[in-house]
Image 1 (cartoon, rainbow, N blue to C red):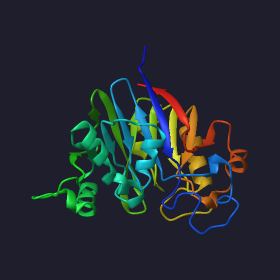
Image 2 (cartoon, helix red, strand yellow):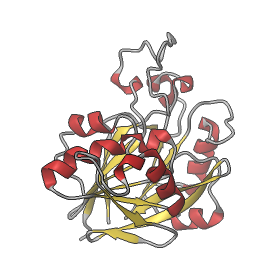
Image 3 (cartoon, rainbow, N blue to C red):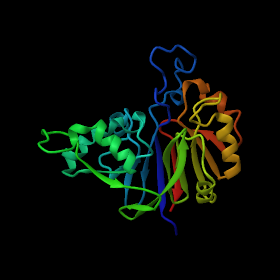
Image 4 (cartoon, one colour):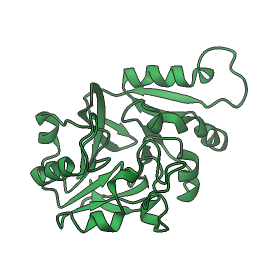
Length: 259
């Protein structure tokens, strides 16, 4: 019997979140919780591991909202601020659990983290800085405890980003191009999450129609769309347009896969 994996969407919004500061569009004014989106991140829980994919500016609130008392690490898709800005808040875990936080990131993303949080690296650190243990990831599978994670290459305009596969679940955000080699790696996944920021074309993200076509090509049992901006439209309206096996994610959505 396969072990279970629980996936919780901590955030499903773009870099600005939804509602957007100062915006009075119908999405930003909506009272529907499914139209209120923190910056994109997911919490993964398996039999022996709990970790997040990305830690954006809303990381602290996301941990509090889900009542997360400890995590084994943070896996980074790429170095943009809406995916790493919350790393400072691992200080609470450092203090409570008396351990450094494992950060799994590419060498290029590690450089950006060390620059962004320069006060956490080097000699003569002042008390209370976040404590990170940086772990290299490339194309090879790696483990958090006994849970295997497979990096998935994709492009975010010219930046190489990484999605991740855990069991029959794949998560790829902030991309406008997924190479054939990655498509082969996820061809048998039952749950595939892709990003789509809006309906109109975008230079570094899938549009709604592009993400839908890609999910129709992969054809998982469930296709999920995340990293959604206020320009996409109201959750319920967009949902009516999607194929039966595709849905818009929303903050707090929980899925179950297997390993």
